[in-house]
Image (cartoon, rainbow, N blue to C red; front, side, top):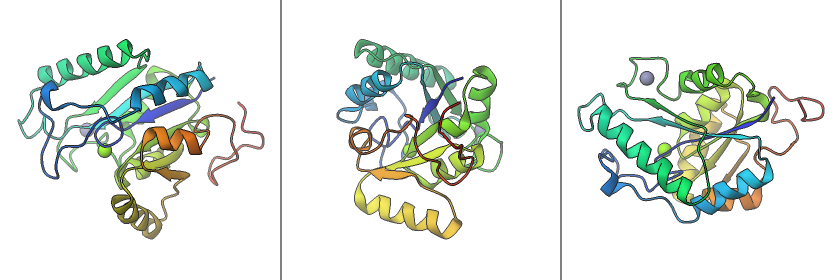
Length: 202
Ligand SMILES: [Mg+2]
Ligand SMILES: [Zn+2]
């Protein structure tokens, strides 16, 4: 059995497009600073942990990027990370419009797809890292820890939303590298309040 680190894409791995805009090609894709080294650090800490990207891409439903172009972008993203020494264990995409499927975060469908493909993943040892309330809610519904990244003004808004909806947040930081400096993420850790185990081991 193993842990997984589920990573949101836009705003966690790469620079987010401006509000209401979409990343429609590789030319607009830019990894956030230090993300490649942070992912190597995650691998070093727990070599068996799966690193899986979980991303809402409504731009597909809206015809702003076609599925083949999105696949191409993700193949390039994989290659860039591989060049930096990090192999992703999966990329799961919701291409649908809001309220039309069970996989667009905050629905946990993408996480459940990953679990179906890799049954040795233990949700209660796993964590999702993202920059939106939908990420935190998806983690809650799936039963893994939730970590919030992003600039302080945005995190304040998201944390207030999480508090008002009773969504637990295990930790927060400005970026993935900062988060890893502050938290173990998937090392055996105290329970997060739900699905906690006595020892943190599986
Ligand atoms: Mg995001
Ligand atoms: Zn979907």
